[in-house]
Image 1 (cartoon, rainbow, N blue to C red):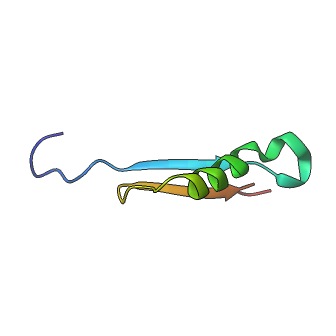
Image 2 (cartoon, one colour):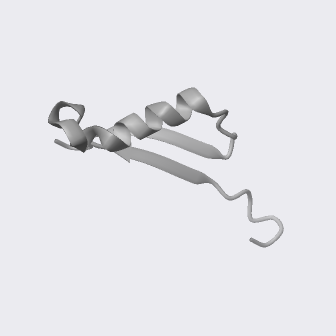
Image 3 (cartoon, helix red, strand yellow):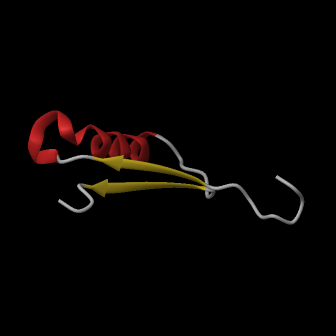
Length: 53
């Protein structure tokens, strides 16, 4: 990244349907990340759920 272009950002997106057993893996991963770690400002951790279902 060149000077003046701004900071790099990172998105951790958890997808899945918690009603369908193993399909909820991404959602559970997001919840565990939030509980266990201090997330830096430049990282966004988002529970995307089913996104459109």
